[in-house]
Structures are given as structure tokens and as C-alpha cells.
Image (cartoon, rainbow over all chains, first blue to last red; front, side, top):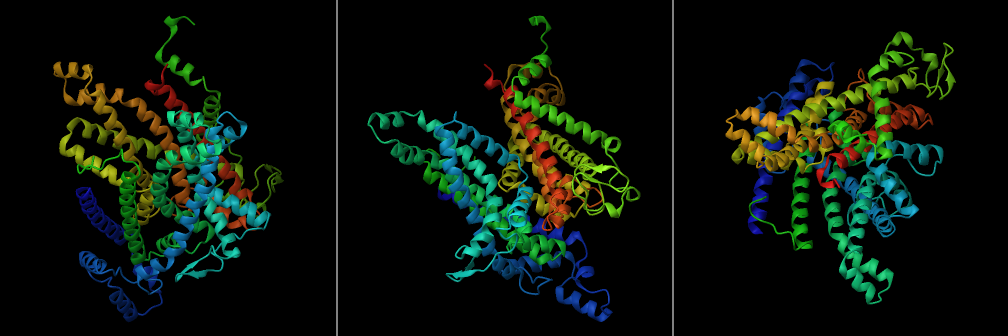
Length: 325
Length: 294
């Protein structure tokens, strides 16, 4: 177990290093940020001053080494556009993204689990079939388009839900959150559902096939023979056994949800770090792009590690070997 | 039909036709292919020839009459472009990007997988480690990173899609090849002292094809969705090559004023294309998977 963790951590450091190199080299190659950040009317002296201030006059490898040294110290450069440290900017936007992601995941479980259970218990019924057809649609629908259509129906035609922004935020343990006020919750609903859609479909499928498998097991027959109520059989015995794959998928999908929030946040103008990334790409704000990518890669490596460990805790049949196979 | 008349292809068609939904999907897909291939001839106008557009026709509702007397069935966009024409051309570009990316990724991935399975050892270890690491990140993130680095353009988005997808093929081919290479026909070919390249490409590869075909179908659909998503974000294709994603993105600007059709109909076209590809892919998987044969 320890060997496994150490191996994984070492591997993570290598991935992170390669990513930093790739990202830096690539961002350097995109274009010339001088042209974008300095007004064409600026005098020659102003230009030279700005270039020196941003460190853009140094050779590429020097810029990278400076960047690497500072990155190790937690300093990923100042945003060209906002003139505040990039990492600060990202951490400032992170709570909004995390709130959206957690809300979407919660929504996916709350909606997906009961629907999947029902479809598994009554696969032949009309409701069961409709749920499965819906989940197939959930896989095929282009998510960003669903977001637009939700805006169209609920914000434009019905006018009941807001189409953009985060609404008022309240401080919870020093972190601004939206879900504590009714208006904030309304703002969360559309982006949250858009982000949850794919995972609802996924959880429905997992819960359904898990339920169908569990129902055929001897322990369920035994529980029935003992005369346990249906509610107890489904609620305790079936549910407990289908949770392993579902918990794993939730953990695994959490990373994807954060990555995909880039799209959702852009549609709903949700002020999270995904929208920040797209805005930064549009103005070639290099430090922010680099910082975002490194932070998200770190986040991913961490999530994947947690999932692997969680898996071995939840399912004793999975044994972690140090061969990494 | 007498058994003598049965060819592998005919048997395949018969098995495929057992699922009516899949047949419907195949028909729909064929129709989409025809539209995409013949768009310049069947579209009511060339939507990117400014001489054929009239600003007075801009943002008309579905079914409205254009200035030249023709009816725009699905309405017009902000440039006075008939949405039908826009969608036909959009299908063409989306499909081209999806297929081109998939074919390239298939070639690269299959070669990498074959090499890994045939050479084993360090090559195998290295290639599969890269694939593993890559597969642990969601495709959208990898594509976003690459496009943030590469910039916009048709070639660039195809590159990004290939980079996202090669690993799936590499893993699949490696898995299939590892099983197949222990079979007797490979041993026989080796005993005959055939050159390794011939064994790999003429004997091993054809026998690894079925799972590849299945994955490739599903991957075309996901490549198309991914391209549409990236184009929607403004990171995919440039405005000179308007895929369905760009049409939807353009419609987004007018959605809040209730002009739904500019992004609604391209989305429906995208959805129909993806659903039909997925239906065909699902059935292909059932037909080509020997384990499911009765």
C-alpha cells in the first residue's frame, strides 16, 4: 500500500513536470502577448518598460526557469489582464466552480439513484423503459446545447429562472456560496442540471444494472424468505451492494465535472475558474492559463489517487499491487 | 435462402437488421451522409456566398418568406442566411472533422497498439503508461489544453481530437493483439518465416479489426460532439468553416431575445447525427462481438 502511494506520487510529479513544460512551451508559442496587452499608441519607452516589467524580453528558457522556480514557491506569475497574482485569481474563482460541481454531483445522485433503482426493479414497466430511453438520450445530447435550450425554456419563454450569473452569495465559513439563499439557489439550478445531465444518465445505468444483478443473488432470496419488507430489502440490502460502483464513478466523474464546468460556466456566465480560463485564452493571459492548467492537473492527480485508495477501502476484493498493473 | 448463398457480408447484414431501431439509425445516418456529401448541390443557397445573402432577410422566423419569394423553412440567422443551407453545410464540416480525426487516430492508435503488443517490453511499457496517464484526464480537458496551446484552425482541431482519441485505439488493439498473437495461425506464419511486417499487418491486424470498428463508430460521435463543444467555446473552428457548433454558438447571441431557431435547429441536426451514429455503433457491437453469439 505504501509502495503504491509512493509510486503514484512520484508518477504524479513527473506528469506535473511534463505538463508544466508542455503548457509553458505551448503558451509561449501561441502568439505575442505584447501586441495584445500594450496599446498600439504606446510610446517606444512605454513598450520597453512594459516588456521588461512582464519579463517578456528574456529568452524562453530563462522565462521557463524563472517560472519553474516561482511555481515551486507557489507563485505562478501575475495576470497580465488583472495585474494580480494568477494563483490568487484562480483561488478566488475556485469556490464558485466547486460549488457548482458539488451541486451537480449531488443532483445527479438525488435524481439518478432512485430512477435507476426503479428501472432495475421494474425493467419491463413503462416507467422503467422510459427511464432507460431517457438515459440513452442523456448520453447523446450535446450538453452545451441542452444548456442553451434550458435557458430558452426557463429563462426566455417561462421567465422563471435566471439565465446567468451566480446571484447573491452568503459567506459560509469564510467562503462565498450561493445555495443558502433562494435567489442563489435559483441561479444554481440551470447550470447545475446542465452539468449533472451526463452523470444522471450514468448513475441511472449503473444503479439499474447493479439492482438487477443484486436481485438475483442468494442473500436477497434469503432476505425475502426471512419475510423482510420490500422497503428494507431494497433500501438496505440492494442499495448497500450497488453503492460501490456508484461511489467510484461519482469520485471519478468529479474531475470530469470540474473540467466540463468550463463549458457550463461559459454558457451561464458563472464566475468560476472555467470561465476565467476561456476569458484568459481569448486575451492570451499567459500566467492565468498556465496556472489554471497546473492547478487542474494537480487536482486531477489528487482525485485519481483518492479514487484508487477509496476503491480499495470500499471493495476488499481490489488489492493494490506495487507493480502498478 | 439456401446456406450456399450465405456470404459473411450477407450474414452480417441479416444480423444487423434484427434490431429495427438500429436499422432506423442506419437509414437516418445514410440520409445525413447524403446531405453532407451533396450539400453544395441540394442546399437552397450557398450560405457563405455573401452575394446570395440579403440583410433584409435577417432573423426571420421559421416558415417566413424571403425577399426572393422562397420560404425559409427553418428561419434565417442574423446575416439573412437560410438555416437549412447553414445546417447542410454545417453537417458537412462537422462530419468531415469527426471522420478525419477518427481515421487518423485509428491509424496512429492501431499502429502504437500493434507495436506495443508485438514488441512488448519497454516499448509496451512506455506506450501504455502514456495512454494510461492520458486516459485519466477527461477528453475535453486535454483538447482544451491543446487548443489553448495550438490556436484555432481546421488542422489544429483535428490534431487535438486525434491526440485525445489515439489512446482508446492503442489500448483496444493491444488487448486484441495480445490474445491473437498466441493463436496457431500466427505460429504457423512464423514457422513459414514470413517477414514480421507481413505477419503483423496481413495476419494479426485483420483479426483485431472487429473491436476497432465498434470503437471507431462510437468515437466518431464523440469526436463530433467534442468539436461542436470546442467550436461553441470559440476554440475550435474559425468562422470561415462554420460547423454545427459554431452555428449554435452564433444562435446563442440571439437566444435571449427569443429567436430560438438559430441555435435550436442546428442542435437538433447535431443530436440526430449523434443518436444515429450511436444506434448503429451499439448494434455493430452486438453483431461483431463473438461472445454474444448464440
